[in-house]
Image 1 (cartoon, helix red, strand yellow):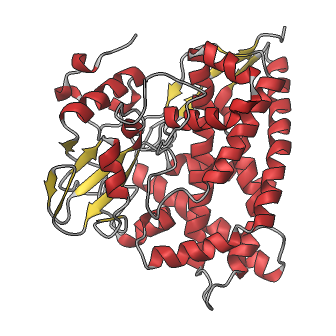
Image 2 (spheres, rainbow, N blue to C red; image 1 turned 45 degrees about the vertical axis):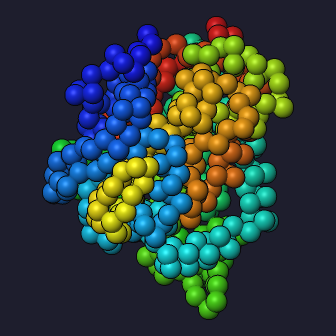
Length: 425
């Protein structure tokens, strides 16, 4: 059912409430559409979380132009006070979990410069070559699972989750026996407090524990690579030097968490939500499947449509004005990428999935400025290879029911998506 923006009661909209984000996408986008049109800097209170006091609240940025203006002025709108949390938490915690995302220059520029040097053309080319092998193996395993279960499978657990996890773990050199733990801990870190992914009633403790366990794994791998260098990204992170500087142990651990969590979860949700979208737009699926030349534009449209990361935060460093809105130093802004990606001032017929949309200046990988996604090229490659392989190898894949959505304002994720292979009897 389609819901028009004018039918939305804005008094019922709370962008801080993770339960609100469990509503159907049509309702969420209708609400964001109305906010964009009527209250483009709407103010919301911060949620209460155990152990973290609620702060002064934030402005929800829903217009594309405003989001772009804020992103392109990092001196005025900083990330270092927290980019991935509505609440103010200690700076050390921001950097531990956010790494590059939660830093400002000059520290951000230094770290990005060192990290970028580790992504050598040779390493990236080898990783890109391995994507096809990983995808082929995951799809073969998924078909075997379906054949053993009367054709039934789960798009998330059998297809979308294993692909990016294996690609990144291969790139980092994470041993097979550690990979299930990496997946479980990344789920906790990006759970948004969803009780299905937290074993007890203390999400903050679960979050901190998962991060420390991931850091401990990285410390172990780093020590092993110092003693026994290998041809992987972990070795490069440990040994790369720029202007006489290397990454500290904490910086390596934080970047490891960022890569395994952000790189894994966002690509996974683009795959699963992309398949869901194609099931809802069968003509677009047939159009893309029949024409490999659409792979590039279709992947960009999937990222626009899904917007795997819903928002990032910026904080004003001084008084100023943006988009006609006056603000004071210290005020918080949440950049809602999902809203900007459906702004009719930028995208024609934005509520329509169009696999041939071109140009497509979406902000699914971030907007202008220093924080554009470092892994965007790899993510695009993974998505192109995955969807083309799905069309070729699992053409009989059919979504059979509604998704089980992640209860999170930060990640637009699916926990499960039921499907079947119609050719399996």
